[in-house]
Image 1: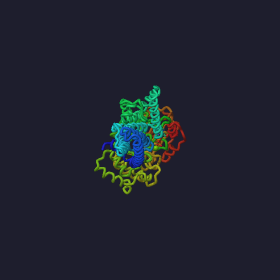
Image 2: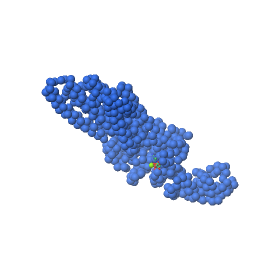
Image 3: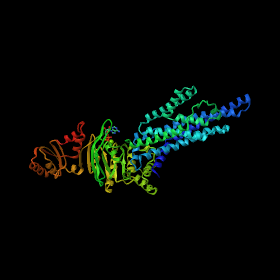
Image 4: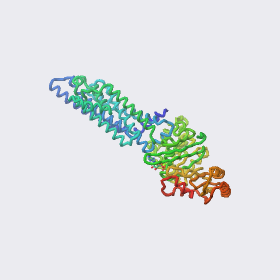
Length: 282
Length: 317
Ligand SMILES: Nc1ncnc2c1ncn2[C@@H]1O[C@H](COP(=O)(O)OP(=O)(O)O)[C@@H](O)[C@H]1O
Ligand SMILES: [Mg+2]
C-alpha cells in the first residue's frame, strides 16, 4: 500500500474510532428530520392559503420551495464549513503536541505524504458528510414536493469546494499554529468574509461602491462567502434571478473567476501546509 | 566523513529562539557499538537525537547516519526509534499499531503476519494484542514502543530514555533487548539520565551537560580503574602535545591545564619523563582513578554554570 493511503486510512479510522463521524451523522440526521418536518408543514400551510386565495399556483409554489430549499442549504453550508474546520483543526498540531507524529515521521515516508494523506482522508469523510447533508436536504424537498432546484449538481460541487477551502485552511494553520490559534484563525476568517459578503450585498442594493468594494476585498481575503453566493445564484429559481433580489443572494454575483480563485486558494493553502510542515521541527 | 560509521556528526548545534539546546556536537559511533548519551534533564539529549533522526533541523553543523545525510529516507528504512514518553496513537490496538507501522515500511503481508506476533511475543504483549493502547500502562507502552522500533530489524536503534519512569521490569526489558541487539551487531544510541542504565548496557558513554559533551569514555576504561591524570604545565609545545597522544587518550588542553587518560599507572613515570625531556615545565601532576559513579556525580552534580566548557575545566582539577 502506498504511504499516502496508509495515512489516509489511518485518518478515516481515527475519525470513526473517535466517534466524530457518528456524532456528525446522527446530528445530521436530526437536522434532516427537523428540516423535513418544517418543510412539510410549511408546504401544507402554503398550499392551504394559496388555495383559499387563487387556487393552485404552481409557479408561486415553486418559488416557495426554492426559498425553503435554499434556507436549508444555508444552514447546511454552515454545518459543512464548521465540520470541515473542526475535524481537521488539531490533526497536525495535536499530533505534534502529543508526540505521536514522531514515530510516523521517522518511518520511510516523506512528510508531504502525511499532509496529503490526511487531506485525502478528511476529504473522503467530508464528501460523505456533504452527500448526506446536501443530498438529504434536496432529497427531503424532492420527496415531499417533487421539486428539484436548477443546477443542483453544480451547487453540490460548490458547497464541497467550501468544505475543501476550510479543510485546507485548517491543515495549513495546523502545520505551524497551535490548535487553539488555528481555530481562532479559521473562525475569524469566516467572520470577516461573512460580514464582508453582507456588506457587498447591501452595498450593491443601495448602490454604494465603497461597501461593494469592501465586500469584494473580503472575498479575496477568503472566498467562502463568495462561493456560497455563487451557489445561491445558480440554484435560485429563474424568476428570482430575473428580479435580481433575494434574501440569500444579491445583485452582485460572484463570477466564475471567483470560483477559480477559490480553487486556487485551497490549492495554495494545501501547498503551504506541506511546505511549512516539511520545514518545521517536530 | 566516514561512511562505515553508524553515526557521525560534526559541530551539530541547535539554537532555539530563546535558548541553546545543543552546542557543537561532534560524535563518532561505530557500527555495533552501544553508545550511551548521559546527562541530566534539559541537557539536550532529546534535541540531539531528534537532529540525528531528521525531526529537528540543526542550526549549524552536519551529520550522517549510516553514511546518509540526517533524515535521509533510505536510511530511515534501516533505523528504529523509540521516542521519549512513548506517545502513540492510543485509539489503535497493539496489533493495529504494529500493522500501521509495518505498512509504512511497506512490508509484505506474509512477512508482516509472522513478524508482528513474533515481536509481540518478544515484548510480552501477545495476550494484549487486541487491546487499545489507551488502556495500556506506561510499562506496556514502552514495550509496544520497542516492538515498533524493532519492526524492520534496524541497523541502528535510537532509544530516548527507554526506562524513564518505569518499574524494574521495564528496566530489565531494556537490558534484555539491548543484549539481544548487541549479539546481532545492532548499533544502539541510548539517551539516559540514569547512570545504572548506561552502566549495564553501554560500551561507551558521552556525558552531556547544557548542550555540550563534557566527557567521553569507554565503560571498560571507567570500570577497570583506568587512570585519569590532571596536569598543570607551561611551555607545552605542539610537538610535545602530539607526542603525548602516544600514551594518552582524551587529551584535553585548557590554558595550562592538561587532562588525559592512561591505560595504567605504569605509564605515568614515562609520561612525566617525556614531558620533562620536551622542556615542559610541570607544576602539578595529579593522577586519579575515576569510578563511573564519581564521574557521573562530578559532571551531573556540578553547580549551575552557564558556560559548558567551565564544567570540563572544573573536571580537570
Ligand atoms: N522546541 C523547543 N523550543 C525551545 N526550547 C527547547 C525546545 N525543545 C527543547 N528545548 C530546550 O532545549 C534544552 C534541551 O532540551 P532536551 O533536548 O529536551 O533535553 P533532555 O532530553 O536532555 O532532557 C532544554 O533547555 C529545553 O528547554
Ligand atoms: Mg529528553
